[in-house]
Length: 208
Image 1: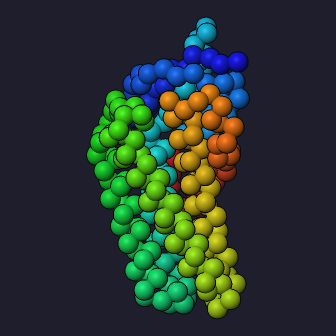
Image 2 (image 1 turned 180 degrees about the vertical axis):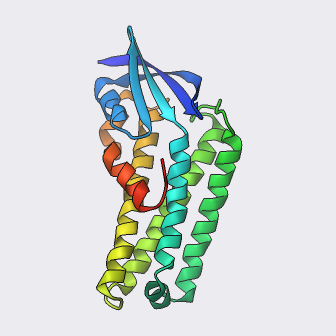
């Protein structure tokens, strides 16, 4: 069974109506489980509310993951300057994407994810975040036999937290793609629980 869904963006406590979509009961249940979404029902209309500030938190978590992992001196030394440069390039790209998104959002957000410009900004943050995760993972895997277990544990803790954030971000976009078929959520990325995301943000020094 499908239901009419209103999409609403929320930033700094202000709601902006984005438009309507059809979602299955299963899709609504999956969306409700996402840390950045809330689902409310008024009669036959179900409203999916997107917390835009969460996207900013996700991007910041990626930046913090880079600084946390590269601050482990033994790890940074082991992976070498060329790999550090690659990671820093990804960090710079993520920072630029996050700044572009934040500037566009301002204190209110009025453009839907399906809007070309809006979608591009959001997708850029997710893409850069995924690149950072991939680069960090490859770097840690490459030196895991050459650094102390404590340093490796600390690096992997930060990397695991970043993986949770990336999964949450992907799950968020899977839930709000307005023009996707009703069955699209069947293949969506499983979303971490709110508790998992909050813990990951805490590990990476982001106060949500």
